[in-house]
Every structure is written in C-alpha cells, then in structure tokens.
Length: 350
Image 1 (cartoon, rainbow, N blue to C red):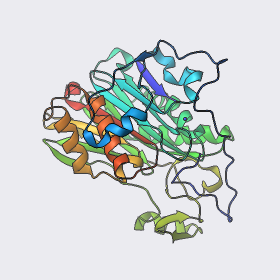
Image 2: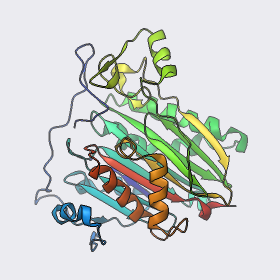
Image 3: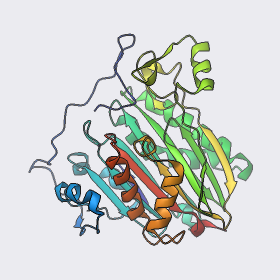
Image 4: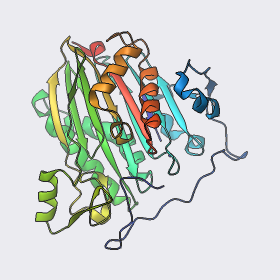
C-alpha cells in the first residue's frame, strides 16, 4: 500500500541578484476546469467538531478530501489533484497525514507513505517533502526516495541501512539534477524495518518522537544560521548573511541542505543526517512535519497535542491530531504550507 501526495513562492526561497533564480510555475486555478477528469472516488467527509477559536475558519474551507488507496501509483498519479488542492487528509490505522496549502501560492509540500513493504507489515517508509521554488523536487523525491533505499539495501545486511539511506538521498538528488528542473525540497524520512527506526533529514523538515510523553527531537534543522553549516558554506567560498531576521546563502536560500537547488548545489548539499534506534514500548509515536508547523509549534507542544487528541498514547485517529497541529500553527500566524504525518510506532514493535 503506497500513497504519494503530489501543489510559488516559499519562505525558504528568495530570488537573489547574485545567482540565477529558478523559474516558477504560472499560478494555477483553485478550481479545476470542467475539462479535467474528477478525482478518483473522492468522498466528502463531514467536518470534525472544531474548537471555538477556529470555527470561523472552518466554515470557509472546502470539504476535506478522503484519499483512497490507489496502489503503488498513489495520489501522485491523479493529475486532477494537482490543480486546486488546498488540503489533503489520509487516515490509516498505523498513521495519519494532513497537508494544508499556505497563503503564498499553490501547495508545494508532498508526502510519501508506503506500508507493508515486501509483504512485511512491520516494514514501512514515510516521508515529508517541503518544496521551494516550485513543487518539482518535492514531487520527484516523494515518488523515488523509497525505491532508491530499497535498491541500495538489496543484498545488504542491517548494518548498512544507514549507508543505504544516505546513498538513496544522494541518488535522488543526482537523478533530479538530470531532469534539469528548477527548485528544491527539504526532506525528512522514517524507514521502519525489523523493529528499527531510521530517521534522516536534509533541510529544516523535522522528526520528533514521543517517549512516554516526552518530546525527543531526532533531527537537526539544516539552516545557514547553524554555526557548523555556516562554517562549511563559507569555507567553500559562499557568503551567508542575515536579512530581516532570516539567514540566507548568497542572499537566496534559507536552508543549507536539500534535494535540488542546482544553482546553489556547490554549497547546498543533499547529504542527510541519520539516526537509528530500536523501537521499544516507551516509543509511542513520531511526528514528521515541514517547517510550516515547527516555526510556530514547539516539539513538546506537538507531542502534548497528539496525546491529548488520542487519549494519551493510544492513537485512535492520528490524522485528526495532524489536522489540529496544522490549525494550531495557522492560528499562531503561519502562512506557509504545512504537512504533518504522525506514525504509531507501537504498531511496528517486533
């Protein structure tokens, strides 16, 4: 079972006078034109009870989409979904997803959820991809990252899973470069296999795990403001400066690692940081999300809200928790795309 979500301006990207800025897509209509085929088997979902604070907003929103499972082709193959999608919601027993368009254009975030890999119910791949300068890179990574990991793991033992994930990130980046397409994407992924959780990221998408109710960050945000990243970039001949409170590379990009961003590839690397741990009973769930969430919601607040929505660590409806997290960020002023993916880790204990 696989689901891949396929949406111009991004807070991570700002055109620079010092480097060639990537071209953007023309604005897309919010309502799909009559000639486009309808979404496959979409079903209207009655809105959940909203908090009083957000009731006015919910009345203005279009009905949520309940995306059916479409096999390996996934949501990414539904061309009509590329036009006018403002929010996407996926509900499954082991995980939930909610993705919401921001106020700067069409939805550029993508996500990938592949469960039951190779017929093993305890093996799965999840990823959140936050595109900037267009959705090309995010869409490409969401469609190819899990396949590249499997390819690099073929014939190798558990000891090399970290190397396989790293090789998959680098191959995805190299393959996207061959597309000669514009834009880039930050990534965070979780690979679950034989009771192990392998979390990787490149950019400022983040993974946070709940360990008996305590938030545990599993990734580091790769931004030019991070001293180690700034030193690496400057040592390679680029400059990093702060404009209006945001640190950027060459006056352009506000992240220091990504897939894509060909015009800055010398300094903006795709090399991920990876952390591997054994899933134990105290590992409750993990939240993968784009920076549209983390810029406004702390790690512990995210864990607290998921637990409160689902009666502590018993995840009856992880997608509802995802939606409430996104709404909290929006109420606090986020204008960015927001994608949240919550995974019930206890379902994967070997």
